[in-house]
Amino acid sequence: MIKQPPYLKKGDKIAIVCPAKKLPKEIDFAIDIFQRWGLEVIVGQTVHAKHHQFAGNDNLRAADLQTYLDDPEIKAIIAGRGGYGTIRIIDELEFTSFNQSPKWIVGFSDITVLLAHINTLGIQCIHGQMPIVFDEATPESLQSLHDVLFGGTLKYITKSQHKTRSGTVEGEVIGGNLTLLAMVQGSVSEMNFSNKILFLEDVGEHEYSIDRTMRMLKRAGKLSNLAGLIVGAFNELKEEEIPFGQSPEEIIWEVVKDYNYPICFNFPVGHIDDNRAMILGKTATLQVAEQDVILTFN
Image (cartoon, rainbow, N blue to C red):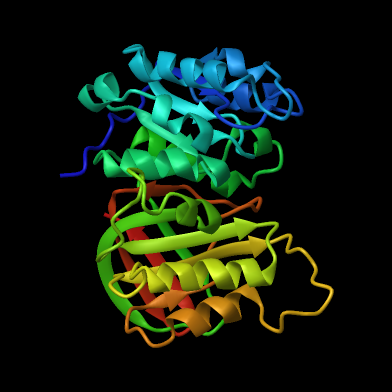
């Protein structure tokens, strides 16, 4: 059974840490929002630490995160940002206390490494907006994060602007950043894809890299037994000197077109202002009917 961490309530303490890259700016805007939600915000050492491009060296980042994984007074841990670096510390973390008393972990992008690992432990976690982008985030995306943390309902109704495959399925939701999901394959942080609703997003990649990574996952058998596939934002693409000839959406469709599960595109998840919260490990119902898409977390 997948464990669900307790929902937050007013007065709870949460911690902000940076397991990867250093913050380029203050996050007072985000802290203020959390406080308006009634939460007490504890700021980890890594929020102001700098070591080359990282939020402190590997030892500091691991120790900072470990402190709040073990602290029973902290009810949620929010990653301040992604970037790169989580994979450098994931094997230094110890999850015994966390397993006994689960708490919400929130992040996306490079934090996919941590979310994937938590999923393998059988605990739900949240792919959602991080403090570095709170000042640019849509009200809807921030509200979705609030709703997840405080036990509200999640139902997303959207339109797919690319070719879809219709169908209605139910399954546990998994996913995150495509590149990072590929990077943890073959490790203890590798998620089980079978019968899951998988969502994917990425940023700043070449089209050929998206093609290569999708084909790697297909060759590894990760895409053949999905319940459904949700394709989010693939943006800020790196230009090719010689055009690749396919968009990310066309690349993904080409790779999965022979399977039978429902698939949709343009879902509001990823490196975009309207990055809606997704609960990894929670069962949801995906309905795709031509261009109309509904995802309801059960």
